[in-house]
Length: 150
Image (tube, rainbow, N blue to C red; front, side):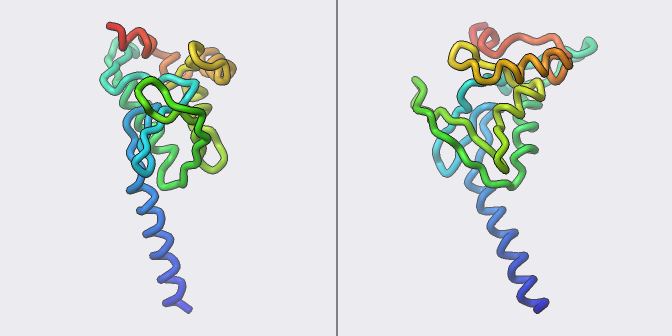
């Protein structure tokens, strides 16, 4: 019985490693899952090189958004609902871990913005983060779409 449990445990561990190996987190709103580049629809996170200012100190808010996503996913299985392609030929999708939207999580945490240009879906989540001064809302920041223009 002990041997069977050991084999089962190792099999589950191997399975989780396989799932993690098929996932690459590019930044806070883009992943590569099983070779498919997926951009989270309806949100925009800071760019990896983007910084914010908190209490007079520079903070790597783009890196924080990526780390937050990485921690939320862990070794869990990701399920995505595809919505089409963007002009860069990335798949646009809303992705979920354990039935919870990763986009909603990032916006409510204050490390993503409702991308109103393309969707109204996450506006209430952004308002929640803003009112509660969560994440970037507790810092001085530039919106990602403005940062990309500069």
